[in-house]
Image: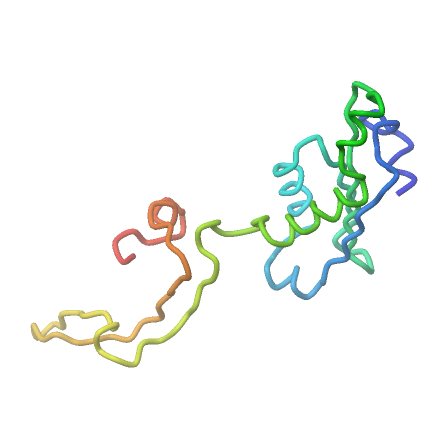
Length: 164
């Protein structure tokens, strides 16, 4: 961390002394094909220049994100304005709660969860016409979702718009 601050590309005096340290589970990161850089980019996209996010390498023993608040450049206001502002530690706790509940790292925001299943009943099987002209019900894996975002799903490169 100290090496990061030796040649900063920002004003180090603006950084809050409070730090939010988040340790991530390597197995879940690997299962979801996430990288530390990807998560940091999502945090920066969501909060912009208001937060300073430092992350270690994906091969490190522990995967750790360090997040600090960047204070405004206009300096300290008078005491009356300071009284209305939330303390940095409480503000970091609010940011943590927001990130854990509302930030989407992958997928579509409108779709909360996807379930895969192989249909057992004929009403969910795909009907195909055989060479003899007969109808045959074929069981194919289906994806069912909590939530809908049909236009966004159809715009995805790997989605077959004919069979969706």
